[in-house]
Amino acid sequence: MLTATRDLLSEVGYRKVSIEAIASRAGVGKQTIYRWWPSKGAVIFESFLDLSDTDGEGISLPDTGDIEADLKLVMRATVAEFADAEFEKPVRALNTEIINDPELAAQYDRQLRRPVDDAKKARLRRAQAAGQVCADADLDLMLEMLYAPVYQRWLLRYGPLDDAYADALVEHTLRAFRP
Image 1 (cartoon, rainbow, N blue to C red):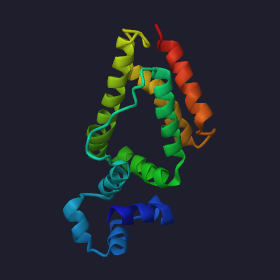
Image 2: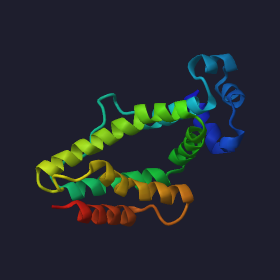
Image 3: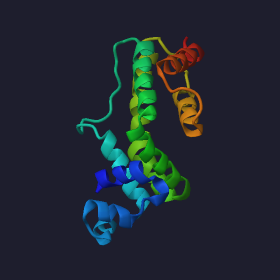
């Protein structure tokens, strides 16, 4: 059902995806989908989580001891992901649903945003301990300075999402937060 959801998002777009269409594509009844998910948004979210599912060992970021190199690696992967059509369509659809569904927004925050941000902040704390980031740095603000420009560029569809952009974000953010 999750693959059917992603396929439909890619083929016909968010507006034309419905529970009925997902059920038909997956070869199940609507009641089967509603047994597992309360809404179209919930199915879309699960299909997105399925794309990013790890091996169950949790989220970790690279730690070579060089925060700049590690952040560049992560940010390059992030911009590549946002530029990937298979990733983009379910994420755009998910964002549309989150805007109008506070429950789904809370689920997204709980299941994805917080765990990912916690992993990022753990890596930044190690950089603080190593003297590569100011000890009093606001790590939430640092993450926003890194990621919000990527999200804005992606959301508004302007400017390239490439390695040069990722590297520039890391360099400028670290310049603001180095001791």
